[in-house]
Length: 625
Image (tube, rainbow, N blue to C red; front, top):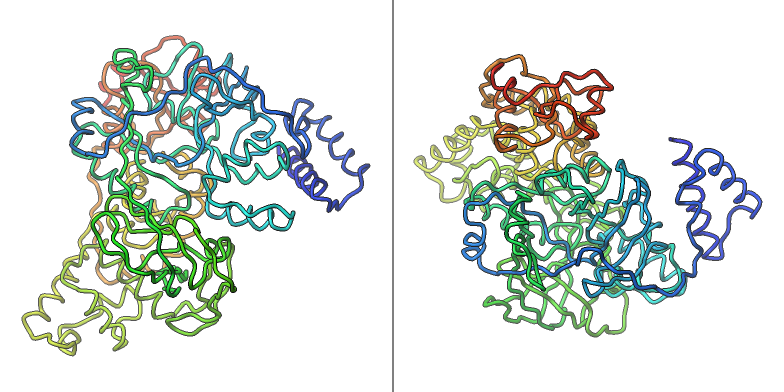
């Protein structure tokens, strides 16, 4: 498999260079690479990739219409639609819809949504997309639906390559996706597009819930959106807040939430209109965009040392608020759009989300200016991909950001931003752990702080030492370590700091919403926090461990398949309560397959039999606990 992957990468790389008129190897050497791959994997899709010029797009009918979504801007209306049903929420990706058809596991056809009934064949472009598996584990005809999109990093690298090739620079992340899949040349540029799967359609349905669809997609190595199961409408607001945060900080564009009834029987019962399915709903934010002019561009340092560009603009009113500053995201966006003082830009504010740059309306003469030194500590900065980073780990701005993040997440409510700045300037706090070394007398040195307040501040900090594992992890500033992600890690069966320190990439990938890259980023960042974790524990932190009822399933990996009498989510929670670990697929490391089926054609059942994994029924499971 490693040799196949290496050959695929070499063939693709050299095809790209050839199309750009910059070949690095001879035709004979290239043919030898293809011949070697043919011997090992004669049906490999890389061998069928077309050249730089594609054919006219042909029309393809959808067997099942790709309908639009009904939408609401009102959380109350969303809750009424949900009623008492379990629903799954995911981010609504702002991209271009795509349908992939697989026959006996092989990618056969890729098509756009088109008018919903008829799309366009874009198979030659999709073959270039790394995120589209060319083979999956499935028999018969399977349709995967999802969204094609361009991340900030890919957009930056794409713009650089298009300029080198003499092509016009792209105007926006969304527009370039539509542009690339409809153009008849430079097919190799489609490798900058990613595909995120959200629907799994079978000729003979075996899955019973939306959640199972996501597990199937994940098993087959598709990128999937982060999803949440809502048993009641009480948790919907959390999902709304999460998507707001992602709209501000995420590395690809989203414009709301998509909610689906989890039970597929509900889909049949509710049916569809000619326009939209009744079992799905989009939640969006009312947005307003306006044109304004950049007065100045300043750079602010984050807790990770990344310099974020902020445009000071001619003040305008957007969605009922007066706006005078707008984020420009990162160095890559400024460079790609050649942003500078005097440019007229379009900005948008959706709901209560922080206003952000959308596009350039009119560009003035001149060059972009980038900082050579950190605005906080004056250390040299480094360009790392689409970001500019301060090289000084002791940077004041960096420390301030990380300590402030910790205070907010761990819940030290009494300590204000202004007082924190004073503590930092007095060198009383140089890192997070220093908060717990402060004495009452240290607080008395602060401006307008008398004994009562000094005691209150001291007690508030000491009180935060008693916390739970999810809150503790989310406060550390782990990359991709938002509260809900840390919660999923803990719910997967990781209940102690020792277990946290033994986490591997393989463990994380098995957890819902962790793809390989996000798992690697999370783990790398977590390992960098080990020293801080040890310091905080030494300073008296007490992490409340979940009480577990010991059973034969404690510490065991359990996979579930087939129809159950109880809700799957209830059984999963029960497994976690007794210290078991829910896994989404069967492997040699799985301890039990929980199913009510006596004999089944399902891939999980077959694999469990092959690997001699213990198969247990729902009734037996509950008897044993």
